[in-house]
Image (cartoon, rainbow, N blue to C red; front, side, top):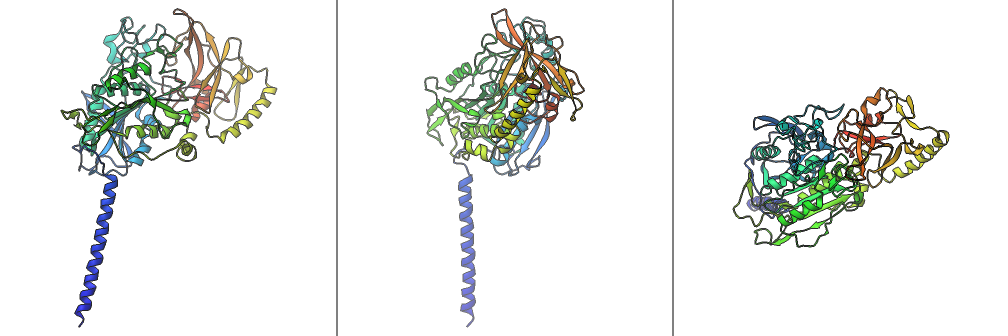
Length: 598
């Protein structure tokens, strides 16, 4: 008599378990349908191999390349599992910088944790005996590419007033003592001559072996000298990479190279960049920097890349991003759309896009978070399904790049101010740029006016004596605050730091001078006032404009050693500058050098 009851209970239990199993299966199918790509995915040799580095951390890695030990930092996201292929980015720091500073300033590790890709921050090679700064790590790390060590008498990489022996690297010694060639006398070489592409290729191959990499989604980015090299690696490894994003950099004049197969590119440059200018300048022929190096400018580069991407006849349009308007960001270019008989897309794009923002020679927005967001938003849209791994590709190359269906989450400029960019804005090199800071500036302005009434006849500046509250007066010295007036041989020079901030300084003007360099002796500039902390200060001579081919105007600036990344506040560097001024990054080709600005 109890059998039917137990049978019913058992049947009910089976039905419940079956229902739960079906529900769980349905949930898994739903999750998989959301996370699995609707495109080709490349599985590298490292899939199913346990991670050699702990996820969620950044670790140092060494690799032997052509008999030389090279190093890089590797960040593997906490979400990484060795059974699911993830994208890979190789990032390149600026000249005299390093991988650690690049990680902070690029903001890519933050994006890595949000979106689950692996990023390798590579260290450039240093075979130059000069330290980058008094506080630096002891080397001028650099990248060879884009014409940095190819200058000849017929294709000069610099003007007659820039090159000097400080820029000599041991690997370039066979190029010395030739007019406009090499790195001494009037030579124009300024980076290592070691092959940088073999290093990048070795790192990409190694990571494919050690981690589960989606071989169709390998990307490159970099800033300054790293951006110049990013263009180079884009041209050299176009059949392997899916897209590139160089930040504030382009080829040297006369040394533009193009990809052998179409490659999406996003080039970002500050409108106030005078170190690697995007357009022609007043400092000489072409896109000449204030230190005399001659670059191609972005328009000539894109003219060649549009041909390579088969869209030279298409019209340029606005290229929208979710950061449009932040620091006046605006992007435009050609989508380079092409109809293809591809398995995952009937129409593909290889866009050639350039972006401008109000700022100098720095990572986008002077902010790691903003830079990382913009770079990943662009790179994440593209895939190279023809890349099988380690540079091997399918014989059929008409479907080189596809646009992915999964787009990044929307991120508006308003949200940038309210949420995501709160931290980086506070960490900017310059004073805070939040709108609330305007109230503080009004108060500071009133205080400054009171001081001005008391000290209107004071010319010069004050320095911290020992880093404490005491100060030393330096009356009659150059490089003072324009608010109190400049000396007779000085002019007020203004630098636009970003949309919200400008910096000023009383700059001596000269007809002769040794341009650029680090702590260049006898450069024609008046020395700064000396205190215990002033050893961190030195003068730098830069071009101010060309009156004729033979006559050059120069200005002298008070420059400062920095130890922090270019998107971070450097308290000790600020302390060394005159009271009321800040050691501002993004105004020197040396990554660890700033300019004292009021």
